Amino acid sequence: MFEKFQALELKYDVEKIKAKGIQMWPLLRIYLANQVVFNKDTAVKPNKEIFKAALKYAFLGFSNFFKPTDHLFFSSSDQRKKIGLKYIDRADLVCAKLNRSLIIEMPSNSKHFLKDEIPDSKISSKFLFYLITWFMAKLHRNVIIESEDILKRIIAESSTELNYQWNIKLFLSQRSLMTYFLKWKKIKSLMMITPYTNLGYVYAAKSIGIPVIEFQHGSVNSAHFAYNANKKMDRCFYPDALLTFGLKEVNSFGGNNFYIQKENVFPVGSFIIDQIVQRSPSDQKFTELTKSYNKVVAFAAQDAMEEMYIPFFKEIAFKASNTAFILMTRFRTKEYYTQFNFSDNVLFFDWLSTYEIIYLSDVHSTINSTTTAEAPSLGTPNLLLNVENRARQYWENNIDNEICFYADTPDQYVEILNNLSSHKKSEVMKKNEQIIVPGFEKNIAVILPNLIKEMHA
Image (tube, rainbow, N blue to C red; front, side, top):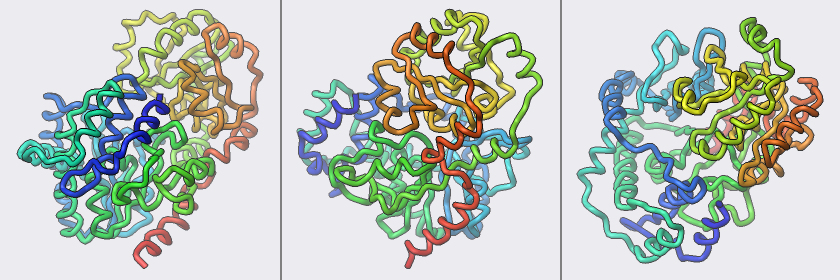
């Protein structure tokens, strides 16, 4: 699907699409490619519930804005994973390593964690920024767009819909607010997990000489539209450095990919993976509920691909009745899935984190979720649902095929599952060190301070 979008991007002079003198293609391509790849618009739309939550939480951590701050880390609460009694994000550790840091967090499902559920980090809600920029965009007049005809032709050929006036006005509002905030606070570095969904903030920082450091949050490879910039565009839209899980991501850049230069990609590993492996979790309830099954599969749901994976998943669960399938939900609730009438061997273990479930299971399955890269580092091999060839497209050239298997049909899946021999956790982990390097805390302590210092030299 992404190839279709790439062809359009290369066909037209997208560099000429501008507003207020700024190239707009790096912004608009994210919205368009998202629709092409997923065959629908998966962007979260403002609604009553979101605005209610925004008004409720907007001033959470407001006093932190008036404290001395050198470093900002934009993150999301869905990055927090339960480790022991707390929900922890790598941002907590990163900010602890740097003096005078502040986490600005966007709550997933419109809810922040309670104060006693998270470490004692300085955190403010991103909802305040969300509300201000939304109202600024609403008040913004329509902008004149240079080469708008090119943009219209691309939208028509890609069979998508795009309210590009709104996207541009929101970007300009984000840029204005963040420029003021960064100058007021005299910020020295901006750290983020998804720059491509916060491009107004990225542009503001880069325009005034503040380095932007991205921490990998998901798949970074030749199949991900956000990390494949096929045209050389304004560098203010892209981060200065990318800190990745492993070494493989480095090879995604260079050549005709202008997202970032290879020498600015630094493998640091995964804080959460390290924490789980060090703790070697066990759970008596998990053992009790799965002891009657031959194998246990940890299945990572992908909400954006629900129409693709549900029929496949339903059939394999029915056919492999001697296997326990633990469905690990993202933003859906357990109750939501009752409509699909899964067989009795589909289980929900909501008292355990995704990573704990994967660690305790024999096999990990999904289509192409990021957990594909993470599971082997927890000692669990992959068996992927290759729906529309999406699993192979994402992972075949990016992960060791001795620990990653592909099934094109439900029957093939069940056959591979039944014949899959047991793997020693240590061996699987070792084979995945190219994907996720060990030692996140040590790597960050060495790399990050030097990186920030060099960028300000």
